[in-house]
Length: 553
Image (cartoon, rainbow, N blue to C red; front, side, top):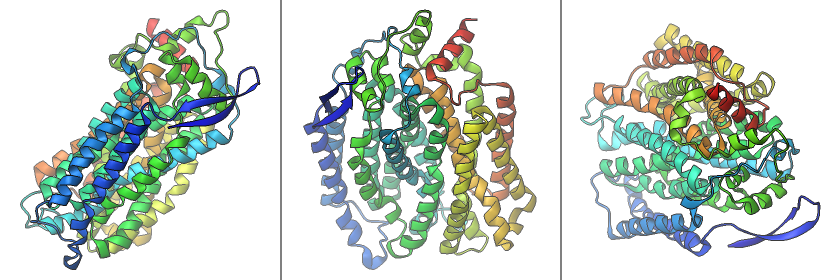
């Protein structure tokens, strides 16, 4: 598929150019249609159980469902073929004669705003998948007779579901980070969206084993969206607007929590927990429909020797490619990153910031998947009904939305390092409130909602800050890998706490999960006081040059 797009040439003349949306458009759209039809073929069996309140435990996949799975498999391969650029593995690595500082000097225009809106929608839709794990666990435990605080007689722990799903997100963060540095940010984002849509069939899987398998694939698809979206944003949005934009877009994970909790309270009483997975089909289709407004990163195109394509994208944003001026060849060479590999994220001048990022990310993962994950379940264990616990969580998430705006403002005014220290410390203090009050909070609804604000909304904002910081810190050729490492370590914290839950066969209390999350956050805050360069409002090439010079010194 191609489209005529007007853009301003560097010499100010107007021109018409043809820009390919996909390398092989027929293959991509054929695959996307097959995937959508394949998901649709899973719905008849789900709908046939409406008289049993959509309980499918003990049933076997029918012929229609199996055909749907086959269509999805073929469709995914066709989509991937349609997205991968020709010669992706053989692109030139030497972009030393090109500078892209003009991107940081351009004013924020309508195309930037549209890109931020689309990526906000993408991040929200994507975050709804792992967020839903918290809300499907009680219903799944009941249907499959799983061991949970609400069902002490089960034999298999319900914690296997989030453990498998979050393990998938760890793999997805690392796989997608590497993939985006090879085939491009846009192609990786779109393919992650396709996986998001197809893994909605988890809601129609009859057996618990099928649910676990599909939840793994769901995690792989969902794990890569956030770091790639951040990499694309920092490489496209002007430096002076980059900080608040990254935090606001990444902070939509809090909005995802609010939306998912509202959907859980509204839909699951009628359509069971399965509906929280199945809504991935329409939301996934929406995301694919918005792909037209997602450009390829011009910095990635330049770093892979595709100057003509980069010029076309940059012209849309009011920028132009420039050759390096006298004395600036080192900066251009540093940004090309032709000699970088993933191991450089862990070496030299990048080693200390990577360590601080990893500690903070693990702490955030422990809060997200230790504290957040079991809030609905623990509230029900303390006497709340399922619907009431969902509304308590929703209200706290809604109250926390202004926190995202506040963190974005701090990032812009204070800078990235101070904002990380402040947000990590504040989250740790909020968790300390749960340690001090414990189960008594169940009798004080107002205090419970207030204390939940930071762990539910603030953690999402802090995660966005860390992912954005990582995307700004590393050179273009390993930027997605670095952002993927940060996102993966966040999920690794989740895998750690969930593995403990599975091994102990019991869900930790609110007090215990608060302690487990607060300690590494405080350690990370102390680390960032001493470690890590400031990245806010600085050109990416300037950050890279400083880091490279520090490593050589």
